[in-house]
Image (cartoon, rainbow, N blue to C red; front, side, top):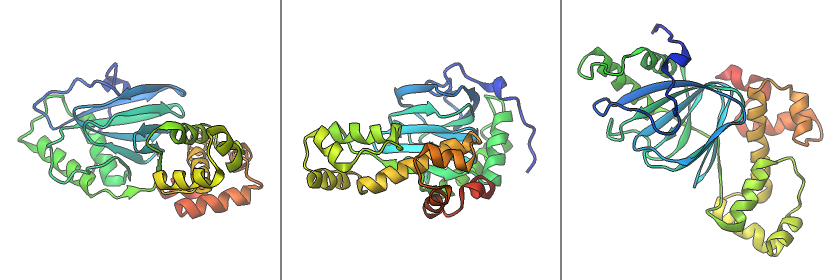
Length: 268
């Protein structure tokens, strides 16, 4: 499939991640944006579902259920009505589709990161070239139908880290996500929160399904994805995240994602 690319900034909505101007009669509407590093959008939700596809850079999205990292060649599906906030982890080129919640019967019912393969990428590119009032009953509408089928058939990727629902455990988890390289022991966290170490570990695992050690390791891997998307070297990432040696980092990354850091984006 060959499509004519349209310059990103030609289709930017002034508040693209928050309140899109969507023609009510169209199932899908597309925007593109170039986002500066360090920005973000406060908690909000949409009446439509949203597909956030990262072309370059990376973005992190947090919902009540947890945090999702979206590196290049990945996209995040957010069902209609799900409150979320975003952080731009690097200068990011983003394409976002707003999709009517009743556009197709088999669209995902929960938030998740999906791989953007060649066909889905071309379909998203095609969406960027269509007029706002595209013909829903003609060839353009059929193209949207194929797009929706591809989204429905997409496999969810393990780029989600669960968070406790609320309270001090949530605050602790968010602190670890902000600085996963900090070496704060279980005993130190327990003292800060007024728990015994055993109660803290048990409560944390009950809410997240993960031990604190596993959670911290996952947080490091997510931060590593951010750094890789900024073209940092393996050695620099290993040092920044507090690994004993680059080989240790590479082994943990491969165990978590199935490939080495150097091949992660090549595989995409």
